[in-house]
Length: 91
Image 1 (spheres, rainbow, N blue to C red):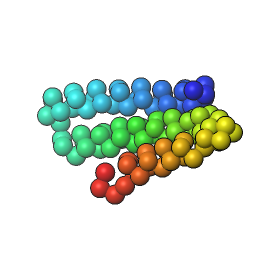
Image 2: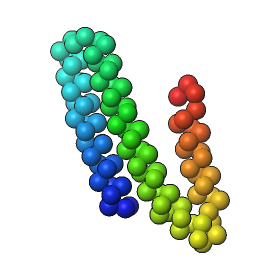
Image 3: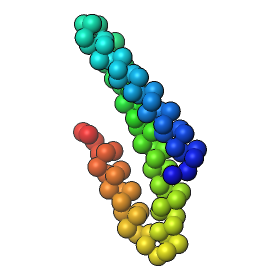
Image 4: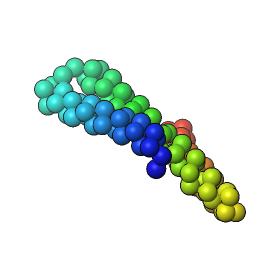
């Protein structure tokens, strides 16, 4: 994994982890539902950001190497499967 991708992904994931721990405490403390919801949305955003960084690194390394080796189609389809599965409406 590329060092810059790893750094960015880990930063987002560690921040999300802290937010999720905070969300659990908020729920245990019976905090206002809308405040809890906002924090959940914020954590989801960080997870999406980390995922995009991981995919960016994958494209720059694994997909690029596969294209050079003549196996690019399978790696490109793999990316499209992820996009279709997680970016589809209603998900």
